Length: 588
Image (cartoon, rainbow, N blue to C red):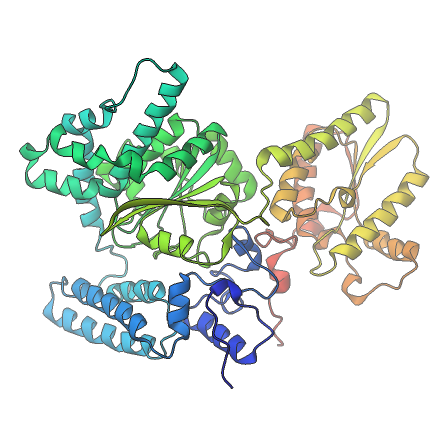
């Protein structure tokens, strides 16, 4: 049975062609990006939805459509050429090892694994490059980063270049058509555009210039640098326009690093972005990926010392939405790592990176590799994408708007939802009413969210008929379509820490039984014996309730005992329930 050939990766829809489905599943397994086989390190659908807009049955592939077509083609010539280039780079790495025996051993080992990995022609070139780089370390020193010394030397050169008067003069020079006759605002915007363009070009070409300056420092003058910056405005016109629009909105930019390096100039660009009003999250690598910066560099490399405040570095790779937003409020320039040691692969990025993407207004991606993946795919992304890169034809920038289906609930939107509820609570207390908050299962049982909302509404309606002079806050009545577990818990925590709750009631087994009776239904097996202690959200809320009761001793907590709430951990990313609930159950 011959499978359907697809021109675009976005056209993949599972469930229509068994041969294509089998090939796609095999491709995902071969590249180790199948979530069900390794859920602890591969992003699931909910985490992926922070970054990519996918329809039912659609599958994201972290590669350009050209590579997708090459993988399907019977003629693997183009794909084999990319594989061969990766093998040549692997050999160059291995040949740098000083020990002849270890060099021969490792070369044979890498050749064996290369042939095995590429035999089927289903391996993404980016995944092959990552695997071969990892193999080159396996028999050498897996704890040593062979690129660290090269990055440190590059950072010293870049720092030295940035401090040279010739470069400063070239960067500060007024544009040739500068006119004092225009308004201050118009000239200010134009000067900001020039400054941005020059720093963008420097981020791309600065490392090469720094290497030249190290070889012949006396030859580097402002006159020699002027040709580099002369066409910056034209080359980076798109990038400057989009960045200045983002600055006008006081937006957040997620800046992605490049395997070619240039870290000092990345930070130099980030500094200007923050000066213009943007908040910047700089995402580096978690482990060796050629010349790309890793998190340790920002802390230990003398060449980067003083460029990044240590307190701006967020080490937690599974930061919650609250933790991330708190960090971003405290630091205009924040540093995270993406959880990978390879080119941009959204299946393997950290939870913190995924949440940073979700909170960003713009993804600013440097380098050809990221541009290929983000611009070369037919998949749609949840955030605006701005890429800038250089190649044999020059320097370029390109903008890709977010998917029309994507909607961002930013911090202000969610805070406004919370403030509306808090205002109602305050008004009720001023009127002499008690305020009760009802913590109940909403989405904690996979596939039962609609039923949970019905149960909560039925039970709270009964309480309202029974209780006088009491405002009851029922989360099921504020269930905002499109918000995920991260958004909702952020909203409800603001409400719960407002100090306006007099009675905090947690759902019991008896509440659920009575709710089904009120609806005139039998209780399904999925609900038998359930109460608030089963809910990940209610577990977090019990912790908050105990903290709030310590501040306000008169607040009552009604429901299951607090000690019974410790069975649940953190939400699965983007889910309304504990991720453990969807893992396969194994028979003893």
